[in-house]
Length: 146
Image 1 (cartoon, rainbow, N blue to C red):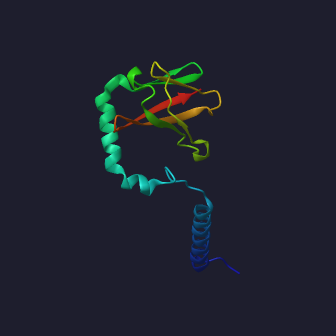
Image 2 (image 1 turned 90 degrees about the horizontal axis):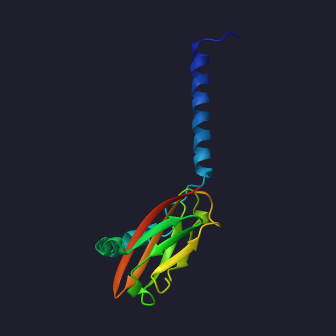
Image 3 (image 1 turned 90 degrees about the vertical axis):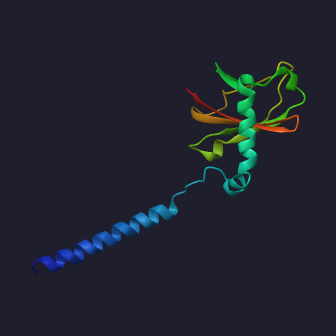
């Protein structure tokens, strides 16, 4: 049998359909996690979050983080110690299974130290969420572990 242009068209359509089928199957089987599991609830609380970010900006450098050798230090004003409630959410953009939260409990000087030796190497974000004197505060820090 001789190969002619009609066979070429049919072969092109079959190859194209096979390629599309493979791509759809691959896309349907791949796990694409959302930025966070409660994304829609976070969107509903957008105004509260914007207010917390504004309060943190007004606080200026009173709320900050420093990355030192082997640990992170989170700072708040010393007069907040014992009166502030909050949490630190460690977020790994490349792997949601490594995300975790810890309570923010500063010492008398307003410092909380977190060891980084148990964290995977790479890019991280720390989201500091606080409540002090009836006001919410939110600040996000990015850091790289090597």
